[in-house]
Length: 351
Ligand code: SAH
Image (cartoon, rainbow, N blue to C red; front, side, top):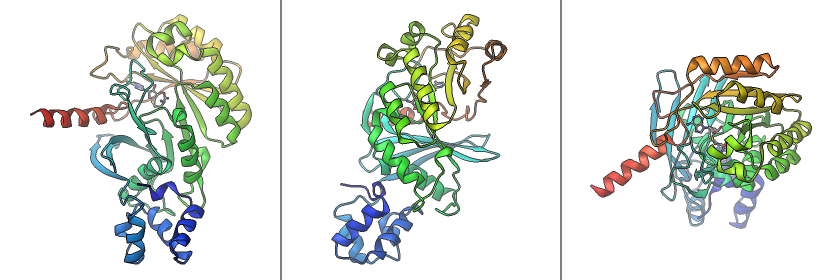
């Protein structure tokens, strides 16, 4: 089965014409899709046309099955895909707007030691329309439309490694920024990667001014290898060099994510080494207190030590901040809500 949300307006027009229908029907369906409606909910589309489309396309590619609300306004969603897989996302509300964190794969294959998304491996890539639909259904839930969007920013920081699903992510970027659709500015989209060097270079060539975020988490290969298997493939130097290429191509400063983990990457020496790496080109270091994951042994650095780390970086001329933790009272860290739901389903099956 195929997904209508995978199609651009032009592609949908071809499908509709091939079914012998008038072209304006495509526009009508497209507008409905961007209101977050399923085919069955489109009251202005003739029944016969809907039936023809339903022979080829799924009606509801994605459905919100659980919402957790944090006391700080953060909301966490679990979505069910048409084939039964569960993915998740987080909505963060700021004074300047609402940011939705979307998943790009079902689970993740990267194996980072601190991350819950990768605990059950990776089941499959999400299609462009499945990534887009996460925005459409949450926008609808918030009472938004395509013209009056309730989601201002999108971050590709949910489950999965976006650059391992390169083609679909590129199509998603094209659809999400299209004026025909929800028309999100590329400048308001961030893509986070563990550092797939050749794909960062490929992304640079798109010339889209999206924000590139690199999950660095270590100042050298030795430490990085102990927490991120991808470090065996690409060195920290190669990643930083690729980031510079990205900056030169897009003019956007690169963000380095650095989760502070007690006894692993939080010493003064680490801060010094990190500063040498990232200095000299427009970038920013986002220090994140590690979000402890039940199944993982790694612990967060204390607040005091995190502040010392920040002070050291700043004194060495590095632009850095400690990211405020949000949604801590819900299953905020990557993959946590999905894992909880998977566990519940397993418990139900075995009981
Ligand atoms: N695969 C991509 C995007 C998904 S992870 C990437 O690696 O960037 C989104 C971000 O959350 C990454 O920076 C990741 O390293 C971070 N992250 C994952 N688990 C975390 C945890 N337990 N605490 C803090 N940050 C975490």
